[in-house]
Amino acid sequence: MKEDQVSLTAIMTAYLRAYHAMNDTPKIFDDFLACHLIPEERRALIEQGFSEALQIRVPEGGLACSD
Image (cartoon, rainbow, N blue to C red; front, side, top):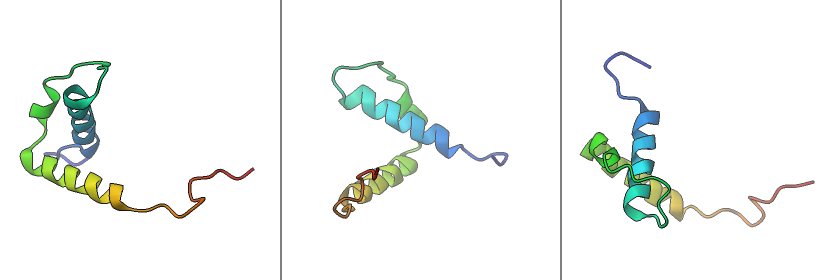
């Protein structure tokens, strides 16, 4: 990691913890501070990336494990 650079792993972890705290039931933990750790511009990029990833179609059998 470079000096004066935010860790992408830390931002993604905070995003997922915040999403869980605001949207999941039952809550395993309620990290109500996580959403305050993510810069707004990063949050928008993360949500755009997740939205695009959900639109990708997996070819038939693409996730199947072969013996």
